[in-house]
Image 1 (cartoon, helix red, strand yellow):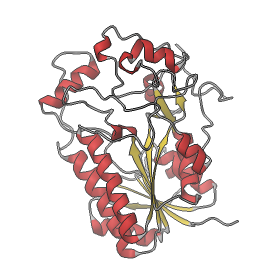
Image 2 (image 1 turned 135 degrees about the vertical axis):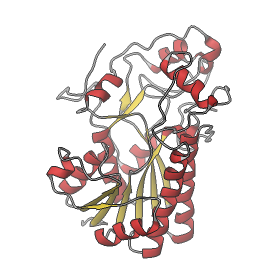
Image 3 (image 1 turned 60 degrees about the vertical axis):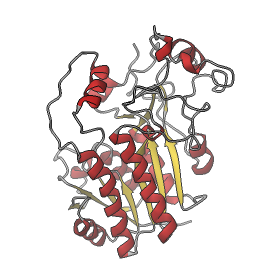
Image 4 (image 1 turned 30 degrees about the vertical axis):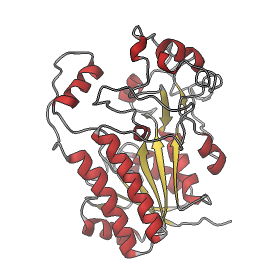
Length: 338
């Protein structure tokens, strides 16, 4: 059976994830055009493969329409975004302190403080509006984040406590910080365009993207760990991390599946992960790290070392099967064991 789509426009194609997604789609026979604010790095996979490129600002309607027109795209993979908060005001500075383990940590301002909201929200809207205006592309696969749940910065100081485990696509969304909110709004924009214009949209809620070929990512992501105990049970809740990750190679495979699947409805969100990082069972991690989740129906709800966030929907509806777990990957090139 032939593919549903032929020509694909990938936004954020000059970024790290784009250099995994574009090569796989090309290998599968799609005619791919990349777009980004900056050209491909000369040493990148996309540059070496001479993947067609259109320079564009996602917040500019004319740029988006030009990229769609030149690529003749009948589907879009939307990866372009700001990957974190850009604010530096006191509520955010406190969160940076918690992340760094230092009091009064200071970060240089490299971006406008409204950049995350402006690019992630208006960039998504402008891209979808361009797709709607031209009327050719009929499916969009969009990079969202597990932070939509509320697992990002807890600016209020109140813990994020899920209503049940494992968390899944039915779990209520309770974002507080700008990045998390921008991803929720991005999903709402997709959903609105699906309702109004029938454009099929998929939101990939990515968990901790891991790049096996990037030394910085290898230092950041450690596998086979024993999760440290939390000495303060009153703070025993997941925040910023569930110790899950998504290998970029698995994300690329998910994108390919999402492009060709028969979707249950016009808009579908999916959590995308590869595995957990710890060697213990999740029940053991809950008891010593996330004590506020240690209660009947929670601690016993997740078998073995499966994560707090379930990928069962992606497995069931799309046939997604992670292939690059540190536990089973035969080449072992992404394994870092403490």
